[in-house]
Image (cartoon, one colour):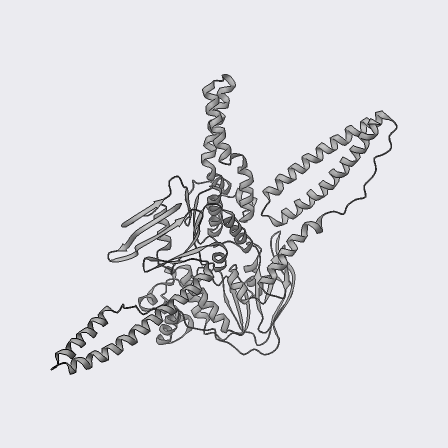
Length: 626
């Protein structure tokens, strides 16, 4: 069954310039499809058209009848004073309306019951149950745990959250709405590694249809089954994930180039023959007819367009010779904000050429750690750089002191270079023509990152520190940054949630968790394997040792035995109730690994106690019967 059908879709923002120019594709029920295309290709425009937020000029859009479609791209406005919890619960507005009607009927039936009211109540009750009304609280807890939305954030006013926090909450609300078709526009932005992995598992288990726009290549590889790429307003299809798409795209490019070259060689050969025949055929009708036949043959040859690749940035990091072994040493490093300690007693050593990823959940203090290292934030402890070390730093939030300046003037003033050098360097980073006269403040986040990288590239450095370097960059720009880093031979320290990037460059991992940094002397794949083994072993490690079972005390006769049986029955009832509550808590904490481990250990211990109580009860009951 087809969930979405797009046929001949045309959309333009300027006369004669169609961003979508006859786009056609279909998505079947249950498919997970990646929407690809360079920046400005019309991906987000397509999503807005599908949800009715934007009109279109020509074509047909069909969404399967009765299917609910949800988009996570822009954050809705909520009334003043709305808390995060209220935003999350707004996903259940229909269920709340049903419950309100049920409560009204309950009050009515308390005074006078009628057959009509009972039928209405039964119908509402079925709708409430099938819609998940009795699982609302469990679902909210599960999704908030998975996306890292703590209780404190849920109590805050939504308007006071950061942009990243709002995006996470809005994603949680969309997942709670139980939509049939999910449209996800950069869903992994602002999520840490743990939350991204949780989202991947959620989507893999999701029984509906998913269309996603993403620059997260690891996410695309795990989640999507096929890719629709928008090229010049039309769709090109790839029946696999991102890795398949890249290999197939290159194969198609090579095939088209080969066809083009063969056609050109044939046309050149025929053209040479045609000119000779025309010359010889001036006084010879047979040769002239043969020349015309060759001309017709040339006209019939299918002309393949020469394939072109997108322009890529061309530059590399300037490098300074490094002398010695020690790049950086840290002893007793710590940082606190009031009563909250981000990290303490950190001791680390970085040597020449090492490539280190600093990982951790959002809010653990990774960016602050980098700022303390570089002296931008005060902290405790000692930091020492090697005498020949010169570092460069790309922060997560790009700041320019003079946003009113043009890109061209920014290069002239801050890099103290000639006009020609400024134009050349900007051109290497795809700032060409009139683009160089845009003001820095008018640039997008990705363009500002590109400009800051442009200004870093020529500096002679041997320690490169990057905080989320691929944020806001499209895939082509990410690949260019990776190519530049691949050539760079100095030491590298970076924070990133881009697992593709981390997997490619990290040879050593620092994990910031619970105020401490744990040092793993290996790359990302081995790091993940270690973490998975630890998570699997944790419940067994934390479970209490089995206590030696005590035999029931000897009783003084039947009366004491009866008392013992009744006491054991009360204790068994209490323990079974405790186990039932633990099972509910385990279901609610399905994605909170730390909490889940604690609860599993408690359940295992409670099971042991229950079995012991049951044995004592059985022995006492037998004694009572004998």
